[in-house]
Length: 85
Image 1 (cartoon, one colour):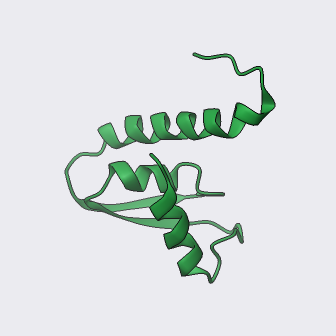
Image 2 (spheres, helix red, strand yellow):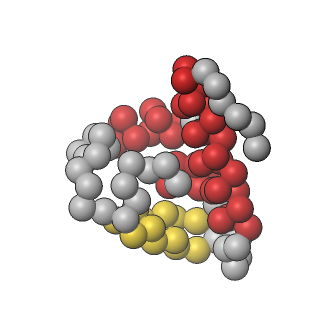
Image 3 (spheres, rainbow, N blue to C red):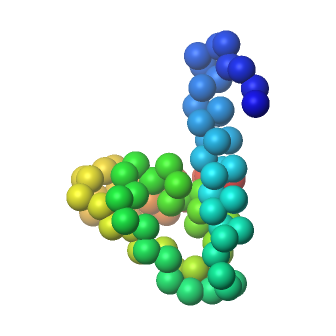
């Protein structure tokens, strides 16, 4: 664990936490392909990094949260492609 003393470094620390969680979660998936349904995905802190590790899976994200990707598939693709997980 690293202690973050500079608040400007927090986004990087959160991304690293999300990446580690997604990688650990992906290790529990039973096969190399399938459909994964994430209920309550919220702001996609797990969904986007998980999609980088569970590449053989179709991920269906379900939530009542009207986040930044609502009706904006291009924004979702842009954020997915620039994610450095």
